[in-house]
Image: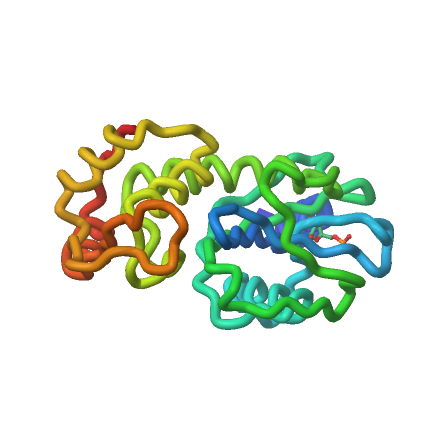
Length: 238
Ligand SMILES: O=P(O)(O)OC[C@H]1O[C@@H](O)[C@H](O)[C@@H]1O
């Protein structure tokens, strides 16, 4: 085949190819029994003044994982977070100016462990309760909805709570964590029976202190079983 024809074809197909890829991070925070999401207010560009997920452009010589950590840190001050890649969001019309595919990342953290400080192109950065999310830019409400579904599936398949609850907690606190993430109300005795059956918790010889109601028994996670179930997975049907 004629070399020039092949080169021409390559150039043409490259010109038609899309090369704009960005990152968007969904950071869920759990604090005092409520699930929240970290959002940033754009300080410049076509979305100035509007709220969205922390994210943006990837540098040419940067891995997508590094870009996710860098952008999150620059925009919100968050650092040292275990970010998991979710999926790519590639609707051709998701970004108004041209075709841009974005890669979603997500994490679930204990809110009080982190200080938030808006920076870079963000005018503000704030935690929003999951049931009070404003209208977000582009397809960010969809990305958030997908991430929440993913988190809800994840809590049915592996233990959660280790980095979200205090070291010693009551069964009710653990149940509220599940209720908040799954957005459902649970039956206390049913939850108690199922969770204790897993042998994931160690009952302590201690009760809550300084509470106005009847003090409840405290539990902690058995780290070995927690890790084993995290690796192996389970099916927690509520
Ligand atoms: O920051 P701007 O330029 O508005 O957004 C560009 C891209 O960065 C991402 O967060 C958006 O989802 C979009 O894909």
